[in-house]
Length: 106
Figure (tube, rainbow, N blue to C red):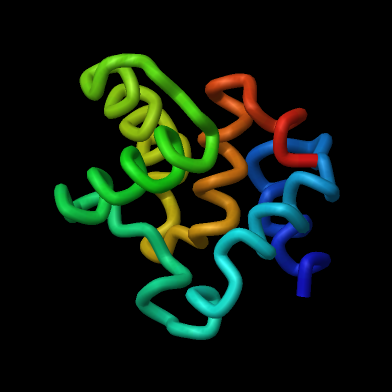
């Protein structure tokens, strides 16, 4: 299962930290079994706020102000704009990489 996520992430980043991918998959757990929960919707303000609060602030322990964190999220949304369905694992990976937190995951 992790292999599929690694291949997906390689579309955006040729060098993938597989331990970080495994940590994200473990963190998300059962949510990945739900088609809706396994995707990120960049058009949903509630969804993006959830990413900011639960992923950036809670899991990655980011303390920057909301506007800064929202900018990071917007940057990843922009990077993935060609995908109508944005994998949550890939989104979280790219976001962790953007904020320099991949090493803390794996």
